Image (tube, rainbow, N blue to C red; front, top):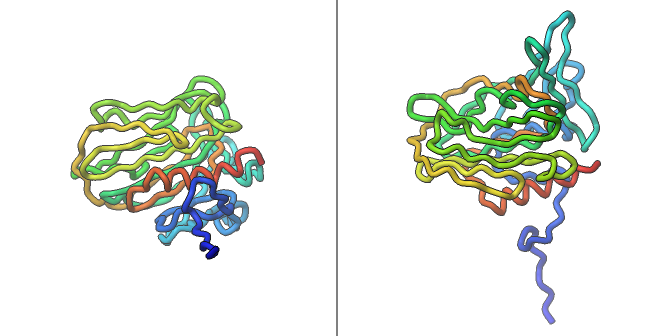
Length: 246
């Protein structure tokens, strides 16, 4: 018998390391990765461990004193953002869209979710320079749904992000967008397609407010300048789901 070389990723039963991301990401803010969070509490910044030279800034809620997003070691490391009566704390960075793109967020709700989870996610640039974003809404702790912004799509896909559709409250949400077939929204590994076609372009840099007006436990945000395959979405889910119960 001739021994066969083991090809990592060849089958579905694959064990991934904690930081074995799908290669090629522009942005990876992983709050369980020490390289990302080494300045989290001292300089109030986080480092991108993807390929782009983009640093994120922690923005406090001031009333009467600065109250910054916090980092916890729960689930291997997550950033907690909070919404208050007249504002919120969040993380901010500047980056752009590409014609083909995948945006991924891994999170758990941390309270009543009454607003979009973020502002100006550069996910689906149009020729007018605008962008769409996926939103998360809910009315009670750990319940809600994920949608694409209805102002840019003909039908608004919705996927459940209730605790019943997650592991220990955590979900992965991925949105893939391109210039020909519209958008696909994933929750964990389940997908729904919006068939609205958009003329895409490469959008100029804009300010992304990650966790704006949200009660979230954000494990990671990743952005790729290409369309991830369903298998790559599953790989990303497997990488981060190792931490859902830690």
